[in-house]
Amino acid sequence: MKMRLSLFAVSIITVLMLAACGGNSSQQNQTNTAAVETDSEADMLYKKNCLSCHAADLSGKVGPSLKEIESKLSKEEIMERITLGRGGMPSFKSRLSEQEIEALGSWLADKK
Image 1 (cartoon, rainbow, N blue to C red):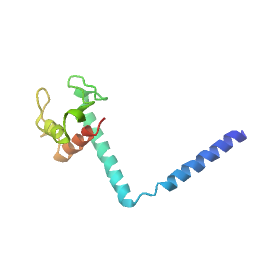
Image 2: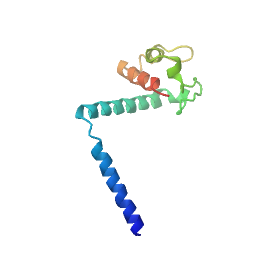
Image 3: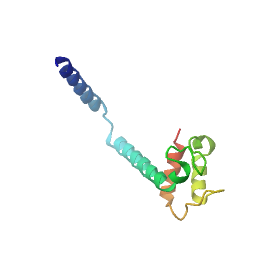
Image 4: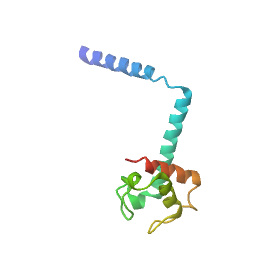
């Protein structure tokens, strides 16, 4: 019992120390928050618009795998493909805003 209590206390102290060390500036926190919001938005956009053809894990279904898309296409090329479509992929120009296409393009280009 004492061992569990000691382990719990050490865990709490470690968490508090790590939290105290995180001294990011508010600007850095805002940047990190914006990145997380953009990732969340892009993830939601992917699930809503791309998942049915490209699968939840990007492995592809009807459409090709997107797992290594960043090694094949630049962010700009990905955005162009989303905007204009190509082959069997439809254009999303009328379904997504420029900001949504940008967020989705960035998100896909960052996938590794």
